[in-house]
Image (cartoon, rainbow, N blue to C red; front, side):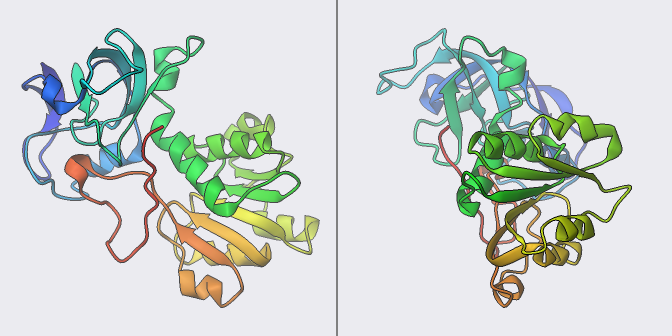
Length: 278
């Protein structure tokens, strides 16, 4: 099969002819679409070595099941499915998801959802959902998404709104309208200091923040808008947990991603929340 793969650490990716996954590898999927995430190009840039080469790039996918494990009772060959393929990669004609892959994901695509939309959901959607779960975002609470127009931020806005939360979004002016459908308040970070604007509007603080854009220094300003007992999530591993704890804020660094072949991307001394099957 043809696959977009890397033959050695830091090498340029190329289209290679590689063996097709076999039924022994688990759920074998004929890929129709592969999703693109920041981790994909970071791996190309040499973010972390892999345990074996060549390795196929890509994680998110949508496609059609070709083979299923003998223990499977719900999915059948021919079913449209989507998910995350960390072991075999998704930028290929075929990929596979191990039957016991706790850090991988597979689910049937609803009839009303086209393949190209399903392929854009898994990693960003699971990361957003994990952030909301950790933050205990609930109806009536105020929840800010710093960087709301990206993949994770966009899903977080919609999921929080579906839970009945009041969403505050920070965006750039060219993406402002993209989040207005889900956000009760939106601030253009190129025009205003979003932290100051939120403090003015919510002097007693808000309940939770998801920050997908700020680094270790800038993210500390999020403490200015959180009430005592508030929750903060960073997807960039930027939150200094003890620093926020001293300010009565529960912070967490999360990810739902690993590199190919199961290597963890974040440094091992930082906690990751990897979500399994969709």
